View 1 (tube, rainbow, N blue to C red):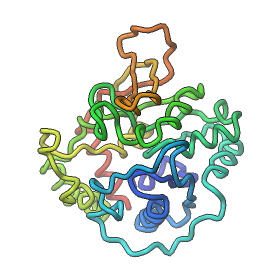
View 2: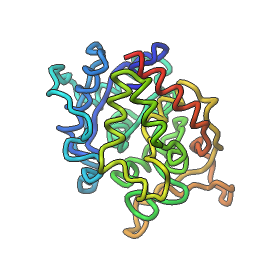
View 3: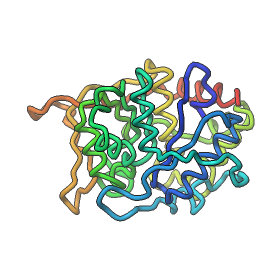
Length: 289
């Protein structure tokens, strides 16, 4: 919704992937949101229905079986595009210059596209990804859900050579939907702001006691906010690797924050944000929808 409410962005398409809930649900939810935002001109594509090499995980305990619990939308009328999401990514990045891939879930679609079309790595302008954690995970003690859901895909993408901006839990837990911000979303964000508030206020989602913080962290909109206003963020270029072999630390993003290894930096890791500026941007753009 933040992207669709921002006129300076050209949203070329939305691709769904199996992630918090199965692909059939995420691809339907993507169409629901596009319709709700009044943007049926934006095509939606279904991509990979499972991780590259591992069983499909689930985060239904957080987002509900619908993946959008807290927001009651009718079944989508907008059809899925017949083209596979991976082929759409390949064709679009070859056809258009300076494409930014904004990833809000597991990186399976992107890794599969890079495997099918290795030239993509030099054609994509950048990848801005929500994923990872330098300190503490949210699906295991050390791993963030999106990376843990398909660590093999994450490792492939981080090693592809494309400029990457990584937005992990160390940043998103500074973007807290407090009661005051929840009220502002409902009061000043229009119908889309009220919808976003409903998603944040869903009982399984709004559990401040889980993390000992005065609100719920807002992860995914940080990706679009960075594309819109990078000056709201601070970070540093680091070497980042993903653990794919250990059962204990599977999916951990090993971030060389202090330059302790000889590995070259492969991602700009963001950890600082002007949270008030972020919420002002979010509310203003949602109110446009």
